[in-house]
Image 1 (spheres, helix red, strand yellow):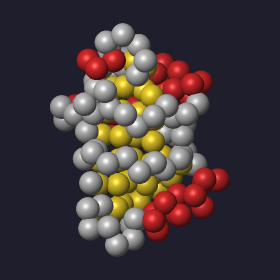
Image 2: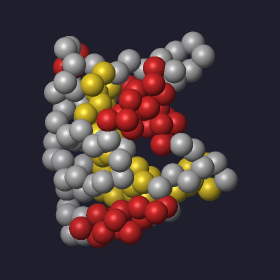
Image 3: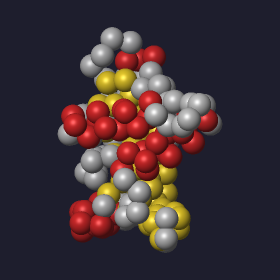
Length: 144
């Protein structure tokens, strides 16, 4: 599994989720976005629906009818009823969620200590390939 830590400082969370989801869906993947905060999930959903002037990223909540057909599913729990291969942990809380090809932990600077703890917890795992990205002057830069 690829495990990416993304520390956002310049863009709002919703924009970062949209960036990642757009790329994954464009590659034919399904995405699960997890946040324990229903207001945050609603804001992410709005941003996905408004992804571009002539485009949108279809999405829905995990408890809504037809959730299994959604290319992007929003949920409080890391359960991919839509068969997602990509997991975005949008609320900054790491959850060990086996079965995903790629996991993104998004976090603001004030959540960096918890992210470091999650990073260290992966030490020695041969099934995990880690990377760390941070925003610098509005660009994403790979740091580790």
